Figure (cartoon, rainbow, N blue to C red):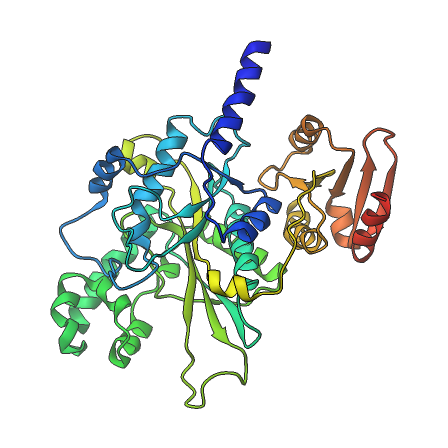
Amino acid sequence: MAEKKTKSKTDQKNILTDKNPIFKGHEHASHTAKHYGFHPFAGLQVEKQDLVKAKNFKDSKKTAFNDKDSLLSFDKLLEEKIAIMRMYVEKQMADIHQPPMISYSGPLTGNPHASDKTKLKTFNLDIVANPKSIADALVIETAFVILKEQIDADSELMIEINSIGDKESFQKFTKDLIVFSKKRAPDMPTSIRQAFKKDPFTLYSCKDEECLAIQEEAPKPMSYLSEESRDHFREVLEYIESLSIPYTINHSLIGSRHYSSGTIFQIVKVPKAGKGPKDGKIKREVLAIGERYNNVSKKAWNKKEVPAVGVTMLIDEKAIKNLPPKKIIIEEAKFYFIQLGYDAKLKSLSIIEMLRVANIPVHQSLSRDKITSQLAAAEKLNVPYIILLGQKEAIENSVTIRHVQTRVQETVKLHELVDYIKKLLK
């Protein structure tokens, strides 16, 4: 047994260090991602077998999402999602923290959509084998924090979000959209009328005023959500609201019909109030796109569905260079954050962000609900302190700090937590 355990640790080290999966210029993004539990995952690339599997997702029609002029496009990421799921299915992620939370720079080697002309570099976050709404929230919050560091003072970020639900939900929506398209095709602009007849989803790539007016009347995916999908999406929105992140529901955000499922979102940069152009036309810049892709494993390998969620971000390296120099402090985390109950989990992300801003690293397993599994993880990491947030603490805006060695516990108000920890570590 001892030999097997040693081999496992060695394998884990090799997976994370054989190659550097983070491009130069993404160091700050990687550091922030690590604080939230995402770790660089090396050896990830698109292989020939992934390209073959990708053909299972394509149909004969040109979809509205294969936008060759777009820097970020959901369908350009299909092969990368397949590569991620292949490594998970083949148990090449078995020796890292479960469920896997990985980060890497892209586009991946072998991605057929990578272009040398644009010299596009992306930073990516993915959580595999976690069906819970907290996984969606973790990806959104981490991406939001990373991108917020690179925008100028006259701009702000906005989350645009939607849900297309599970396979059955989306099929019902699609059926009604086809019926709607047949009725409204004569009202479409001549330039896309024929494409609209063949593929009603073309409606969502058209930005003409006539198209936008028809979009308002078209069926909305959220109206077709199953009870389970509706509950999941409601929880995601509650997490976003708990973080005071501005968001809006974008009913035309559909993602890719090839693999997207459930939550679809994008992070856009917009001018702050009073900082926009005089003509009133607000310029939106999409900085990130993200989605759930739960059905990739089933469609690619005809195996059990593996839940997964990820985001792809455009990192403006010029903007990062223009920022005031920021020293990246890398310290070993001495705290393990444990949460119990839904109300506590809602407050968890804001506490973890508060600690990040204060340069206080912390371990966590927000995907876990039971205290026994969280305590076991803390014991395995041999941390000297545990931060406990239960239902009682969530109501009282406090946490319990447990000194592992002495078993002494102290209650600390949230607004005093950072100062308390800094004194504790002196």
